[in-house]
Length: 373
Image 1 (cartoon, rainbow, N blue to C red):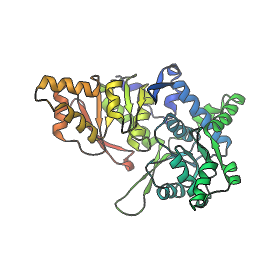
Image 2: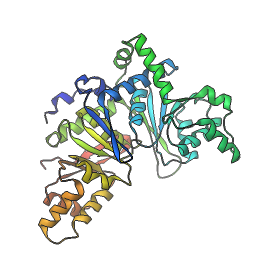
Image 3: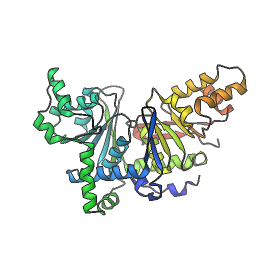
Image 4: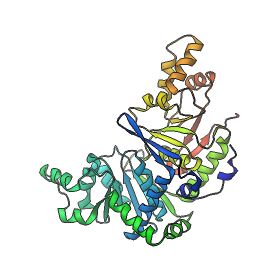
């Protein structure tokens, strides 16, 4: 791939808005029962636009923090990039966080708004709200969620939660938030361009919370320039293995910088991502037959072990192709060290696994194998 067109620094949201030719291409494939729902680049871009304009209309100002507390879904990305487009700092909260952990991140970051999904996660937000005076807005991503019903259940369990009147004032649905943004866009179609043009590369675009060796999590502010330089270097080093329009199975949590980075690279390069939860990802690979797979070492090891059940090299290749879908062209492992024998096994069977190392504080990638070395 010619990387030169991707080397100019730009904030992450611009990857969607600067590529109108992709509007009708499929960005995400979302599992829904036994079928999948296709979501186009244009639909994601419109969501980001509506959320950004809603936030601006709702009083969100440059530097304000907006949190996302949800499992992977299309709206996760739209909320995150919407916050950034509105000149805010996006604060991801791991979906595995307890009520206390989520409350700490929301409080420490001075989050003004939180986008939440899932009954359990919404209850954790409601339980934290009485101690979060700076939190003025909660947006529920799923139309099936009912904040008052959740609050009632918490009250019955003896927890202190906001009153119904407070919930009416602070909580709204994703559809309501989008409708406000869409109205702003209809009245002033240039409003979104003004926002995009006003994003400063030196403004904080993301605040990541990472656990230290002791004490509470620490907040790591990264500017759009920090992340942009990292993404530029990433593409430049790996350009021989990358192409526009590739397909991946996106299962890494978007709340982690590894998963968020994969999603943003997909936005930039026009990839189609099949969303998956961690429990289903190995079943997804033979169905999707991705050309890209990014993972922590555990799944690479499971795939290798499944193919190593045979002692015959040809059969091992067949089993590995069956397990991965047989079309992998770009493989990336990160998060921990991958055993050398696993890397050598994949290489022997035609798949080079690139291994990266990083730290959240380093935006995050520090080192990466070069394909030719």
